[in-house]
Image (cartoon, rainbow, N blue to C red; front, side, top):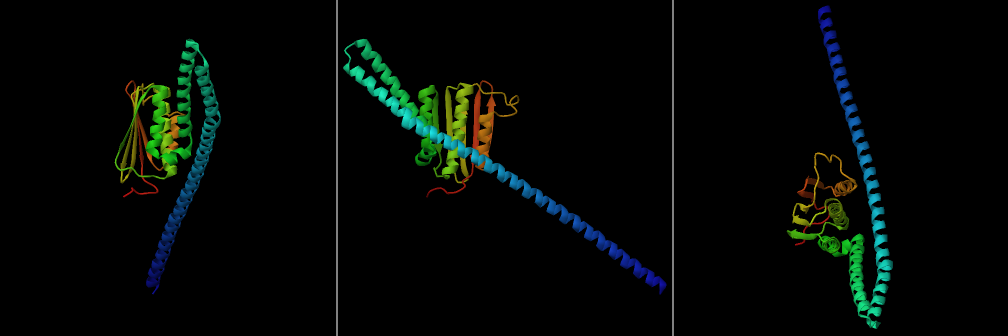
Length: 265
């Protein structure tokens, strides 16, 4: 009996130790799982907070754009139109050939300045982008670049166009604007090509310029312009890639999946 009793005690003790070990393992797993879930939740909260900050920053920026747009249209544009009318009156009333010639030339320059300002005013206003649509808004921006900077700009659209939603299209438009501004300011290109490729899987945007480019190995961190594009691409849940070669130009590729709508039938 004593031997059997000893065996029974040994078995029971082993089972207890085994149950304790299993319980300990389960406790550790549950603890790590909860800790991991807590870290994920914390990371998600931080990401949401950062996204809210970014959205607030972009909203403030859009409000500033809208304010500048209205100021250009309502104040500066009207003042220049008055000056243009006065130049026209001087040209019409004068009998001096030199004054007529200078007034005519000044009137033409002023007319071009008014057109350029109107184009800038439109592209700064988010309502214009929503009303005109993405392709037309881009074309309007390129029209200003062609006129003011004498850069050959071309927009190529392939696939069946469809809406991505006002907020998404505005973010895409601002990315393209930023890419064009960076190219014109830093790379001195003679040509800029923009490609919009609509597919059922999403929109592919490519911005190419033949400017001076830069060494990708040397430029490990992007400037403010590139960071702004990356921020907006992140808000779009899209991807953005930059490829550049010195003296051969820069290519920026943005991939965006449709978020709100599907292609029109």
